Picture (cartoon, rainbow, N blue to C red):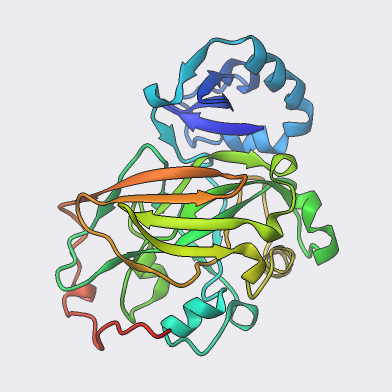
Length: 298
């Protein structure tokens, strides 16, 4: 099943190239204007019992073309977004990083950085700096837990989505450079784990315009998906709707105003995100150009 969030916090099931609004079937009565927006978290938590309702609503409800709705980030209020740095050897080499995710651990991105497929990446005002794209697979946690052994990882994963980990390139604190609003597009929807099948062999590509910049397969991850779930849960309790970003392969590069980023992950989905220059985000931290210049290695 492909589950989307769209327009004014509506929940939908994607069927072919249409979306069926199933909000009334899953909303517990809090309403789509409730704060915080956690309807999707509850859908994920209660999915086993809700699935028959979703399937019936999807088959009987009126369809709307996807082109007529605005796709939002599927889980706008996760407890946390967990990201693994340098999790492909080729990316580590290109950025001259001497560590890898299996010995470095993870960092956290703020939920306020999340955006959706129908929303642009808004570039902050950072003269002399580049903002880079990083294509990643998003793992959406279903059943929460702590100290999850790697052999039980599948029972804790709800589904998958495309994810862009945007970053102001530099040497400053990683989270600071990755925390801007719209710097974590996720979408275009969540594809449930049963539809994806084996996530350890997924082809992933990213284009900027017509230029193919990144191409990798999840089989090349340094720390694999079972290991990511195990490592994160060893440190903190995972909750329904938590997002794990698996790390990016080689080929990261700058985006500028007017670009379109397209990410496609086999059996998961394809997301097209526009890039626009914003007017905010200036900070003294980025007042100096990145030194030394970015010289990627192969």
